[in-house]
Image (tube, rainbow, N blue to C red):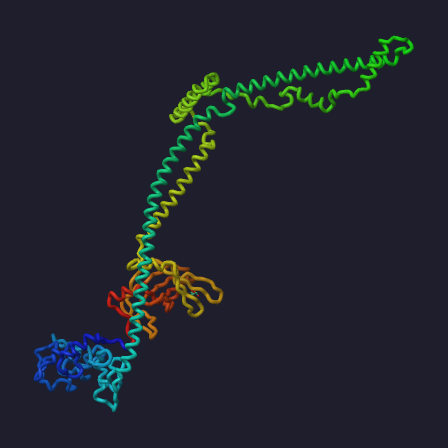
Length: 559
Ligand code: MAN
């Protein structure tokens, strides 16, 4: 298709004007008919002071500086910007030499009327693309005859136009769906923000509460260490009692054991006497008392002797009977009270008081010690902070702080997300994270909406990042649209910038400029490497459709 100032008129508009028209000179479009309504003279459109007899209209000689006397011939074609430079085609003084007409008007009955450049009129070539009725070759130069093909071309065009319109309406529908989806997603983020704000308020209060709890636990701890186990009066007294009692028992044990040993020795002596007595007495001496004694002794000797301790048990008793200072079984020195400190002395009194009074004093003493430590009068205990209560309080506070900072981070991210540019109507929010790809040469290229662009080698599936999404932009394009409609067309288009991809050896960091055009479905149409590691993607998506329609900027028609 040639780039020219062709004006396609809507069929309805053109037909309604035609109905009200008187016959116009050849090549005059309906919107210029008013300049050609007099039957005797004609005034040049841009220089009305120049009047010509009507016979000089379309006489194949250029009279008007703006070419308006030759609407149906190529006599004034040299004025066209498409024509090569001709003597006299430059402006002279204040006279306007710009062509007043857009071209030769083809009625194209059965199809869309259009203008053909004057250079094409009677050039011996049928310009069916613009002039399907063949009227641009009315002079049949060189015997060329261009028959009217508007019926078939119009039919074909209509078919394609219907398809195009259907596709456009599908695309617009799809965009509406995307916008609705985007609105839903946005609302979800807004709800998340509200929820997080409430959660954060609660968590802040919780942190404050736990900070106070920890401070109190620390205070209590500072007080508590005064009475730590081992250093208190009651326990110390108990230890002393135990020590005394054990010593008493040990001494008794030694004494009883001595008595036992003495008894044992006496029994052994007695038994030896009786054994001798039994062997040496005279049985012939009939003394009934002696005989009875000997029988009793024999009975006694025949009975099982009770165990009176073996050697092992005796060794154990030896050990037990030794003082603790010798065996080290109990190291009493470890239970000795430390030197009494400032406030410790006060606790001695406690041990002798009734429980409620003791508790009250206990609390007061803790408070007093805390106060003294807080005011620098007493040094804090080095063991402060080691109790389970404090550990629990500190853990709970840390967990609450972590949770709070996590929520704050999430809130920040969500707020940032709400402020981000997701394009008109937030539409790209719905596409975020989805990807389209295309095989091209030795690579498969991938575009992930608002994510990354990638180049994947087909040989070894190695991936190269061609850029990370940075911003949404706009760009002017002027491209052909191929017959399948997968092209950018011309006009302003939405573009996405992807930058800071993988570094290119001996070059920049890879980047991709993604140009979008309206299409029924998301599709990566074309990838080019415009410069080393600078890529361009052309992508069809319904996401940008309505915007094209709003601007009345349709893809170029392939008529
Ligand atoms: C790879 C690809 C190419 C690029 C070169 C640069 O082969 O990313 O697109 O041109 O590296 O060295």
